[in-house]
Length: 634
Ligand code: PLP
Image (cartoon, rainbow, N blue to C red; front, side, top):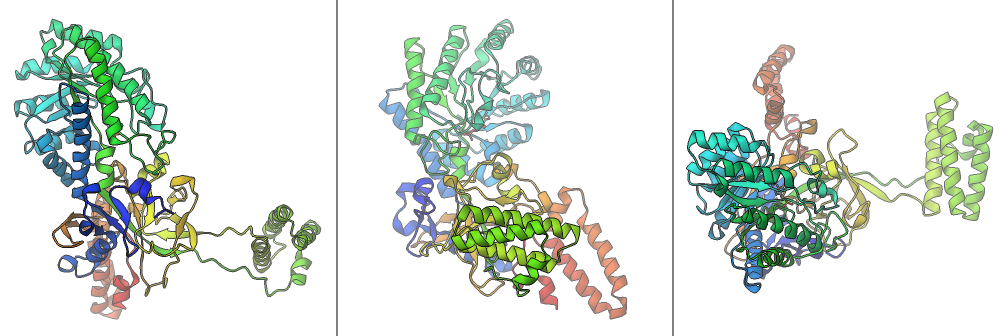
């Protein structure tokens, strides 16, 4: 556990059990020992060919943990409750979940259900997100907010007005000044009184990767001149009472409570000014930004960690708002936050398999013999060889490295000219590897090939270099003997993981057992990826989404219930995404199989067609040799 810093990033949800496997503590720190769930047991159960009447899910696999989601919501709410009580704050907290972080139907439905008792609502940033938020909130607490952010056209605004008509507590947040005219016109036309919010562009700037949203040059929000103009216009339209919410968003992963308090304090001043100007302000919406400690370092210096706890975050927000409002004698507003990452990151684990590893070949001297080799060298290569031999005898590390490089380079040049054979070039490579090994300079890092697409399942790793904890989910009672990087299935050299938390360029890994079938499988987990990764992922090389299971803790020691199991998209499904028509493709190929199979008899054509059908219907990822249909047919 210490090697992978699990206690740092995993607490209170993930730990290592006595079998050396990662177990989930579904209720966080309130989990009792017998309630822990072994991740390996989940994988074994759902990938068993007999699972769900022969469904047997294929990896990669997302394990969703609704109990963890519930615990995250409760923890966030109680952190604010505690801060409000202890600071005698005279209003309450009611958050919203920004659905863009993970729009999965069951994630959003769970959040609405678990958050209902504390008026938890949703935030939408586009028309389809608004539609899903509207339909989910019909089953939620009627006081829950439905915050409408993002760029808006008349259709978006009409939809938000209709949501109000449907008795959903909807707020249209102006991100652009131009949206105001549409809101005024459409609300008059539809005879629906809107509740309006303003997104303020704050001066407080967050300097990390996620901070480009903030500051005067940020993409969204209204500056002070625009805010004043909006207030005047609403006044003229007799609608200033509709302006009730102030929103801002400093950026994701706010590194410290100092920056947070600075931004919240500035926004609270804007809020008080809007009250002074006559708006009927009720809510201050502090946006997202509550950070996640991906590397367990608890440091405000890095983009992937934060220097505060949930409790410290809530305390800083409440204090900053209360301080400003008290000085201006303004009634304390309802506090809303739009935390996404902090709510959904922990609830899902991506599990994938390492299928093979680059073999570590012990370097050997060529059987061609050194004399034969040297005879083929040009004069320069020969003198590099002499220098290398001398340095190797004397054990001069740097000189050896210098001359292995030089010798290799010269021999490659000779090979390109055609004066060195491929056997001779291979012999030079072997000789140089042998010298490197002897002086302790051989690169011991191996490449583990994983049955995964980085582009589909960890897009932020590729796109913005974000790191997530990646750890074997079993064998953690055995010391890993290898260091490795991960290489995915895509035909793309960016499809790799060679940076890991803690600044490491390789990961401690175990030797694969019985490669090529037979032995036990080796499963790795990518943790804290429940936010953003699923929606951002693409279909590079036509690898689609992983299979998904929803797993809850159930009665009985260490038992769990799989409450939902969905195989990942098949090859036919991903082909459809790119406008192909798999049914027509299959028919054309089947026809061809019948033509080509005529000589061998119809049975063979039928077998070809059935193999083609398997290929369309299976997931695009690698299947174990034993379950491959081609092998089965032969
Ligand atoms: N609200 C708005 C307006 C955002 O742009 C974002 C994300 O960038 C969020 C909320 C969610 O932020 P986070 O996931 O950091 O909590």
